[in-house]
Image (cartoon, rainbow, N blue to C red; front, top):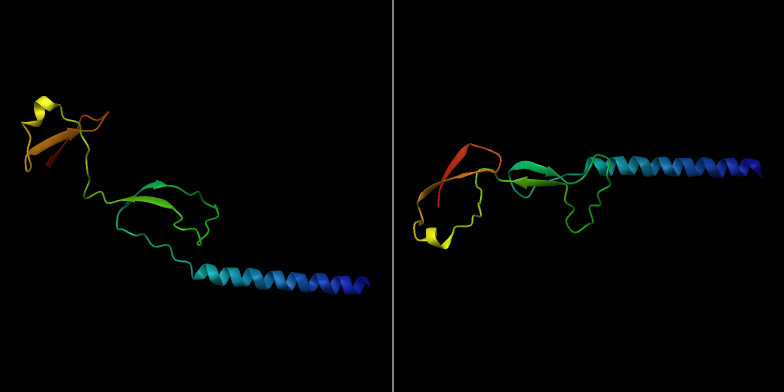
Length: 104
């Protein structure tokens, strides 16, 4: 009876090894494709974290196209009449002295 148990356990080990080999092959087919060109501006998942491909849209990284940016600004009613499309403007980022120039 002990010999039968050893054979059964040996069969389980071989089955587990086949599952590991299959998982490695499937991993080789894995592709992570970004929906846009851009720069990584944030990492959502951590190394070693399980991500399930069947999730609707698993988020791994946050990407941004830094060539084109949208700035939301508040302008007082008194100043709104002084600005218009095509006008050159500058803005600063909180904590930074550098001025960035753009057009409306």
